[in-house]
Image 1 (cartoon, protein in one colour):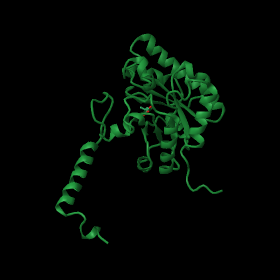
Image 2 (cartoon, rainbow, N blue to C red):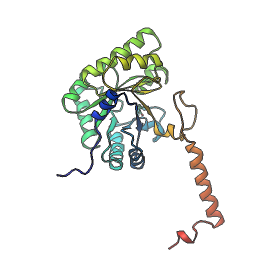
Image 3 (spheres, helix red, strand yellow):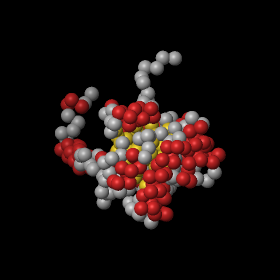
Image 4 (spheres, helix red, strand yellow):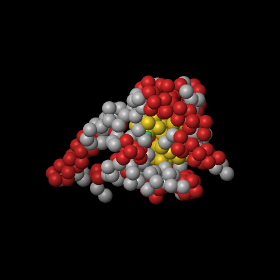
Length: 269
Ligand code: KIV
């Protein structure tokens, strides 16, 4: 069998860390965005369960199912065949019992085409992380504001503000590394916690609202593109006003159809 492209792998991220090269991860939920992110050289695409909120319109990530994650992972894989695609294990897919968790992770890899899975939590998921890694399934951890626990936290709030909570995030990052995780997302924690957690491990940390010292940064693509409405977390930076761009383009189309300007002679057969 001849392979005409070099697929991205988790080892690329380790190399970035060793070289001190900061990198990005971005969410992708469909084939077209995945293809564009791949063209832009994004080294890791996350099929985040944030899709429940930004694509499916739920108020949190809690309602997202494994079937939905498989469906969107397939699309992302079709759009970016050689990408490193990490897929979130959704709420309820890994907490109930270890066999079901392993079966769900296998589905995301085998049916969806994910290269790796992401799991929220620290100490309570360490055994599962070890088991999955032992099965050949690379695992990315996720600490700090773990959105699947929003009901426990009482909202989307900064985590790790007390000394005890900060120390726990730092030690959990280390414990995830020791359990075999290849990277850890740190979400919505004080910059000092992001720095300490990063310095304590050899694997890359990927921050979102975790300050400037993590090895990488991740954003939700519709946030980066300025598509998301409403009050946004402080860490979000929109690089274009995508919502206005889209609205203006749609209005221009409507106006041209109304005036008869579109379709012009160059658009007709
Ligand atoms: O679901 C998601 O998009 C995520 C990122 C915010 C890290 O977990």
